[in-house]
Image 1 (cartoon, rainbow, N blue to C red):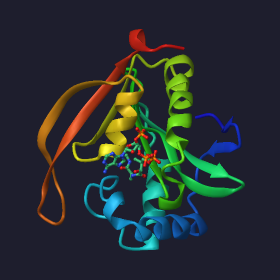
Image 2 (cartoon, rainbow, N blue to C red):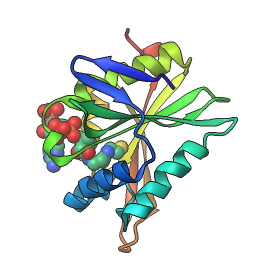
Image 3 (cartoon, rainbow, N blue to C red):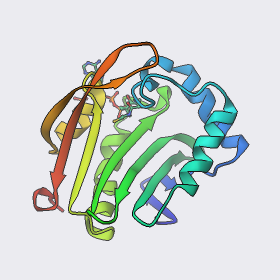
Image 4 (cartoon, helix red, strand yellow):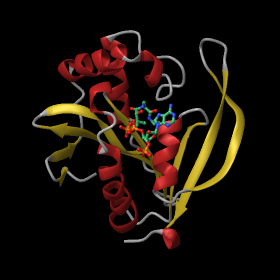
Length: 183
Ligand SMILES: CC(C)(COP(=O)(O)OP(=O)(O)OC[C@H]1O[C@@H](n2cnc3c(N)ncnc32)[C@H](O)[C@@H]1OP(=O)(O)O)[C@@H](O)C(=O)NCCC(=O)NCCS
């Protein structure tokens, strides 16, 4: 994972697994539970401690084969969201891109601006063969990003997820091959 990436006035760097950031992220999620359900498969984290433990585990879970490369999106030192690889399979040379933004940062084209940077990192620096974007089939904003960036809808995995409220959700699977990547 690169230390930091600068794109215009955005600084991408890892969110430290500290109580301070756990509180900030907990507040961001709590402000917009309805949208963040898509990010957390139906249940936002119940406490600041849960958020902290998630970030601690994410740091520790990097194994021989699997890696994370999620970057906090900072503007003037304010955390606006995250973007990066929520999972990299070093053996298969594939990665899955994930992103989220706090409510007030949406609709400003931030993901649109940063997605190509992450894609470039994956294909050119990390040597990936394929990048996926998997999202809830009802997550229109996320699907738009995949579509606008030339990801191919490879299928809908029907009723793949069961959320804590009992509802079932399908997953839209988008992917882009290195051969489809335009520098
Ligand atoms: C996904 C997320 C980062 C998108 O935020 P954003 O980049 O600011 O995106 P926008 O709100 O500008 O929406 C992107 C596009 O979808 C469209 N869109 C969003 N919601 C829509 C809806 N309900 N119906 C129709 N179109 C919609 C927007 O009009 C925009 O279209 P455009 O590109 O043609 O202008 C944000 O919604 C989020 O943080 N969601 C929670 C986390 C999440 O779901 N992450 C993705 C997991 S795979």
